[in-house]
Length: 232
Image (tube, rainbow, N blue to C red; front, side, top):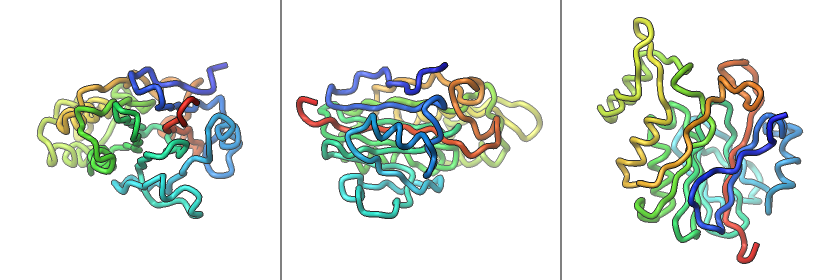
């Protein structure tokens, strides 16, 4: 059986903790069996989001314990023990950490959110120099299988012509999209130089990951990041 979690391989500060669940830990939707198992691995209840493929960023320090999940596709935290979370099943989780270990962020970056600027919005909410940010790109559908239409390519290229390099033609009006390549472009454009991860494919690794495009099912995994208490 595949391991239940993936620990990012990135040079984040010692106080920054993060993990991504696999299908072995269970479904991470509300009411899913996996949420309780994930909670046992964390210092507190994650801030779950109502994800809409947008660019809104929630403040986990203020929102945790407030009741209804905020409508957002990203979150940031500065207080120890406040867990930022996103649900995923082909969309890319982008984990971010300040080099001093005093702020973390996470973004749910499907093509719509990525095109609209969810990574940039998360960096802005972190309020730290991008050169002092470490990023990790978690499990997502890869360019080997992620076919999109012309309107998706236009959405990216209209914002930044350099995004054309992340697309490869397949059949008329359709393209393979490399989400990881676009994320690296966006991070580099903002001055984030330390970018890690990006070697996954949720669609191809069926024993390890849920994939909406492969299975057309609702199960989700989760990516989480938080700052540990001193000495933890």
